Image (cartoon, rainbow over all chains, first blue to last red; front, top):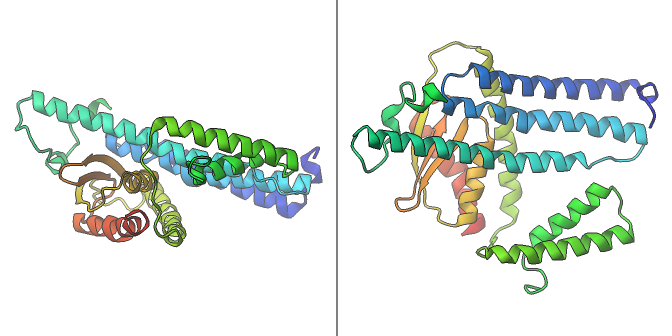
Length: 132
Length: 162
């Protein structure tokens, strides 16, 4: 229970690999938030961290504490499940808001109202893309 | 059954949550967990949710396995895009998909699957026309996406919920 020196090497390596992989995946997701161009594109990136990133980091925690306490420590599963269940809700609301604003702005600009034809604004994703 | 446990699945999940949080399977914790599960289930009735009808529970596992595999695969794909490997002209855009599904739980599951998979986003669902709009990060072929969503996910969800 009290310290990394009691951890057998195989568990230490496994923990380190899981932890680094999870951190790398989350970092790439956050990097995507920075690098991708438009709002709609950017919303894709954080799901990397909330899916595989969380899974790997939680797995590292489960291995580490299970081996140290010589009993299965499984409550990290809750972090994975609750994180994976709640994130898409927030993202869907965000995207819905952006879509609503795009539609409203286009209606204001006097473009033909009625059915939304999202294909029509593929190049550049204007106007939310610039502001988002 | 229905009076005491209006949402058996959620009540069971609450019990599991309680036992996992306390990391103990003792008589006392099982008793407390059952209390949490019963009260939690009763509170949900205030929301007046439509009843869940799960027809074929066996397919859920198959769908779950498929979704997990897709999430891993698209994690790799989006990671590659973010890091800028294979710098070809990438186009992102919207795809409109005609859906046959009307069950609210089926649609919610589909929204959840699409959004939690990196690379696709649930944007809008027009309930009158039954048209779903999704955003795809790496859009190569619109027809292929329509086929993917309809054959891989919607077909299974229809079997489960309708």
